Amino acid sequence: MAGLYLGSEGFVDGASRMALDFGVSNRVVGLTIVAFGTSVPELVASGIAAMRGQSDLAIGNVVGSNLFNLLLVLGTTATITPLPMEASVLSWDIWWLLGTACALIPLAILGGLKTPRMGRWQGGLFVLAYVAYIALTWTA
Image 1 (cartoon, rainbow, N blue to C red):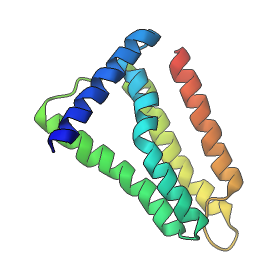
Image 2: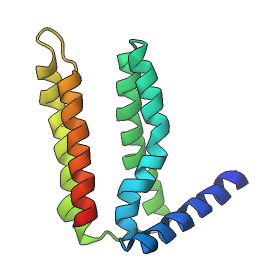
Image 3: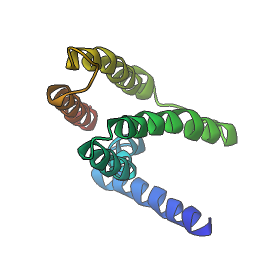
Image 4: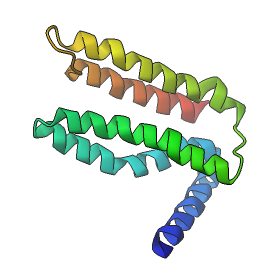
């Protein structure tokens, strides 16, 4: 536990310094670089599961980790100390989050004529949406 705490302290300090170095807010670094760094293990695990034909594991990992982060991590953190939100979180980031979550439903249904699935073109759309989100967030 001590190692996890100290590593997290260093990670937060490094992210804050990175924001200063890049001249962007901590929010932007958290939404992009920190989010990428903490999500790489999920990307690898889901990719391996998908390549092995274990799509339920791949999808469950992504959906479960997002629910865990939103509900347990954010909820626990806010319980420990209230979290003020920048206006841009409510006017920009939340809408991207909601929009991509809502887009998953029709994309998955349209992905397969007989059974719902997320195919290559739907996955490509999600990747392009993420690239657009990152580009727009960094330049906003």
